[in-house]
Length: 90
Image (cartoon, rainbow, N blue to C red; front, side, top):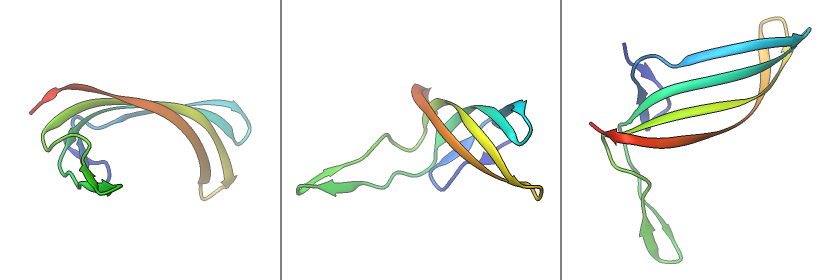
């Protein structure tokens, strides 16, 4: 199974999302995903071209933080921090 993970990545297999509820309308999300880079767009800074990674790059992403449910639809606000580690190439 492959999931969309924004315009630059595909998640293989599907990401794992966990939410520990700590109080009414409050939780702590923990996200884990194995990602494959599907697109790279270079950027220019001070006249020098840079790019992060290359198509086919494999990464593992983890993030955690705080979640507050704003209304019962549900609509929530997430504040996350995390990291990505290169694990290989496809």
